[in-house]
Image 1 (tube, rainbow, N blue to C red):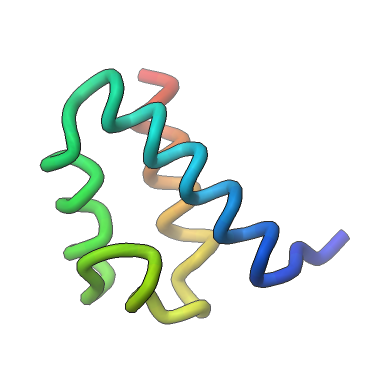
Image 2: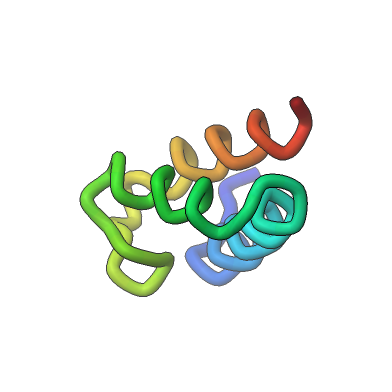
Length: 61
């Protein structure tokens, strides 16, 4: 099943919230910066799956 843009954004925001609660917002910001973005708002959609995977990995560590 292919996720819609809205679904990706929701998933990324949820993972980012978990990472921020556990490690702080600077860790979330560093993930976005790796992909040339400051937040979900300026993240290129081609990176949604990578950013989500990175955030999930950090959240589950």
